[in-house]
Image 1 (tube, rainbow, N blue to C red):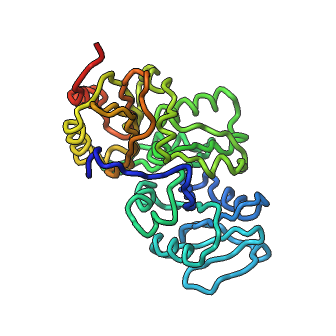
Image 2 (image 1 turned 90 degrees about the vertical axis):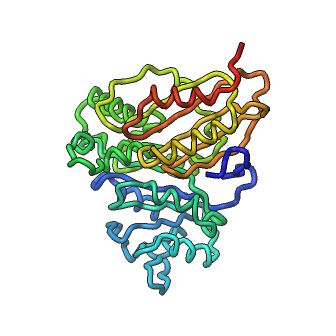
Length: 346
């Protein structure tokens, strides 16, 4: 962890020409294949590369393929200009291959079939310098089978084994609630949405049938832009806490005052070291003593990135923090964080 004093720029929204990457996740049968086929065949006017896991089932109809590239991977150019790749092994290798081809891409969608945790894929876009140069993580989208998801969310797993369905909801920037036509009543759908919000209350929920959604619900979410964290709805922080029947849930709090830089650095470093595995997502806005601007950050597991953004001006200096993860103790987090406050408002 390199400390808050160094300005780490993750995305320069105004001039960022890197290709935005959407990570698409969801339990078996949630409709990922249907969604990917929509992307590969619809005339949406965008050039999108779809990277599917070897175990994916996007059987591509030869009549839809414009060109097949002779490589060890399966790379097809579709009639609508999109590209479909089947990964056998290293994601970084196939991404590098795409960038070397020099194709002008509007977006990349990576399907995570068979992966419990989208975290490692998300981390690729923070860690690998060659990938960071060409691509930026845009958002994590989770498809949900409205008819069957509750059974998966409630499934009792052996001790130490993660519930993949719960993790996929927790990581999401956008939840696509699919197959709503198979759910008999509006009351049941509303109850299901409440359950999903109990795990992740920050991701908007989009209802759909046959995984048919507008491309703006999948692409260009800008969920990993630090500017977006600034726009975080303060309502999230004022909501009463729900009773969580799951070990994975969302925690948020705010603390007024200015922070001691050194103590805050130590707090974050220790938090990432001790709880990084349990923290799926974290984000927030911090007020540093002696700094006129807001420090905005977000993280995935142990990876943390942040930068100084817009000035506080006349706005009250209130630190806002959000965590999604498992086994999180809100009181302990808040108490330890409050010890970083140097000056409180009079």
